[in-house]
Length: 279
Length: 193
Image 1 (cartoon, chains in turn red, orange):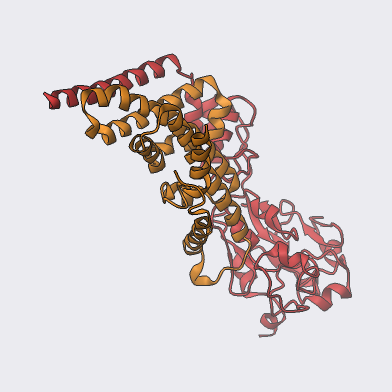
Image 2 (spheres, chains in turn cyan, yellow; image 1 turned 90 degrees about the horizontal axis):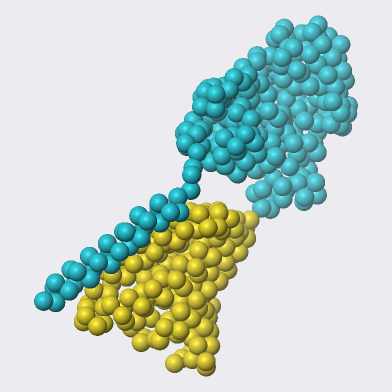
């Protein structure tokens, strides 16, 4: 008899809650948009926040509600944008895929240091301690705030102590740009070839060349030699517009400070510095 | 009244569910990385434990005891808690989207939190009255919330400190939890029934 009670009671409680849940699901149903699900499926799912929303989920909701543009996902690039545009029934120009680039080549060998830093291994902390341990106030400290900020694991600290961006993994979300206390990382177009001034120093002349072997002193020699007017001076630093640069290399020859390099990664890594040139 | 107040103090400080009884260690370690998530989880736990203690107490004394089925306690409570959490989730989604967003993922996660079941079982075992059970539920979950918030505060600071290589990550978290538990042992014996 007792086993009957047990079965009936447990079954009854189970059935009661089942029924309650079933009814609740019907009466408290919240109409959800099918497109939110579809848009979320199309997104990369890295939750990097480059779109300005807290995650892919929020971005999907915002897109369906018409708050966010369909091409708002930078890491997803044109493929994702096309998919979302198809879901939303819109025609939109593709986003230009961007990648992060580190604008400093001043590793231990090339850039001098003022003192040995033993503090917290965090660039922002090192920056606050006497303005950083590098002689160059804008050079890379190499303590890896950008590495930790990257949701794609695309950045690593190379053997020379400087961060290296794996362009195949980089989603161009720009989190590393914000993470760097010295503003060394910038986003550049992924598919454009050309040359880069891989320096971030806003000082001029001897102050730069004393601190680093590969710093841009702001002499404007490259500016005058460039036939395409691709180079501009921004706060004592030459900046090359990759969309105008056609890879002619005249500026590389002209630069006396070895600050300009082709974008090709291997050459940056091996270094076109004084040692490599004389070898 | 005196007993209610002593229940409140005992289960928040003296007999803290996480730090003294070691219930709910999984969410304690899992969601204590950030203060924000700890607050969300804590809120959801207070909500669910209080409600489930109330419902399981009623079921125990009005269904199980009259039928002589006390041995079904455990199974029934699991069933009730799981159903209740689902119900609350569905209800909240409709009734209060803001609260639903706030609790977020933590609400369904609590279904498998052993602290919830422990409170329901202990309330019956200690022969609390209905009011005492509810206060017990509130106290235990507030204790859980407090432990979670303290832990997340410590862990946010740990992120910025230099931890020796072999101790990094989970190791230092467990050591911290142990020291925290030791510290709470200082309350031992201050209040008992």
